[in-house]
Amino acid sequence: MRMSETPAELLRTAVRHDGARPFLTFYDDATAERVELSTTTFDNWVAKTAGFLTGGLGAEPGERVALRLPAHWQALAWAAACWSAGVCVVLGDDDDVQVAVAGPAAVASAAGGAPEVVGLALRPLGGRFTEPLPPGVTDYAVEVPGYPDHFVPLSPPDDAEPALERGGVVHTLGGLADHARQRAEQLGAGPGGRLLVATDDLGTALVDALLVPLVVGGSAVLVRHEDPAGRAARVDAERVTAAVA
Image (cartoon, rainbow, N blue to C red; front, top):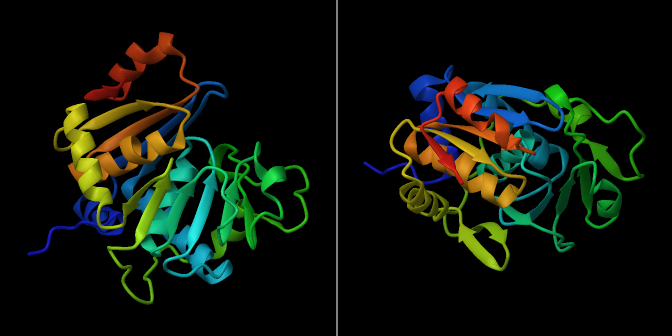
C-alpha cells in the first residue's frame, strides 16, 4: 500500500484519524492573539483557499504563487492550499508568479507586480482590511468564505513538480514529506508530538509547524513575536513535547 507522501494526502489522513483534535495553535505575543484550529477546521481553510486560488484566481497546476507573508496560521493554510492544487509556493520577492499573496506590510509594494494580487489583513479570526486596498488587490477575507469546505483538484498534482522555492532551493511536491521527516528526526519529534515553533520566518514555520506535524501525526504551537519569559508557562499549558530552538 502506498504511503501518503504529499501534504494534501497527509492532511486528509489526519482528518480521517481525528479531525476534532487541535492541529495548529497560533500565538502572537505582540497582540495577545491566540487561535486554535482543529485538523478539520484547518482543512476547511485549506479547501476554501484552494477553491479561491483555482476558481477565483485561475491558478493552474505548475504555476507559481509568491507568499509575502510572516509566520501566521493563514500563511500555512495558503501553502497547504497551493500544494493541494499542485501550485508552487515561492518565498520572497519574485514577480515571475501568477499570484502574489501579501500581508499588510507588503501589500502596497505587491500591487501590480503579478497578474493577481491578494491581500491578507492578518487580523484576529481572519478579519478583512479596515482600510481601502490599492487598486487591483483582492481582500482575501472578503472572497474566501464563499468557497466550499472541500476541495478536489480536477487532476491529481504531479509529485515531480516544484512545490516550494526558498533561497534558491527547490523541493518537489513528492519530496516535501521526506524533507519533513528528516527535520522531524533532527528535532526529536516523535509520533503524535506537539511542537512549539517560535519564529517570525514563514519558511521555518512551513516546515516545522506544518509539514513536521503532518508527517508525525502531531500538532504545533506557532508563536510569532515570542516573549521568551512566557515560554515555560506556554510549554506547560499547551502540553508541548518538543520546542524548536
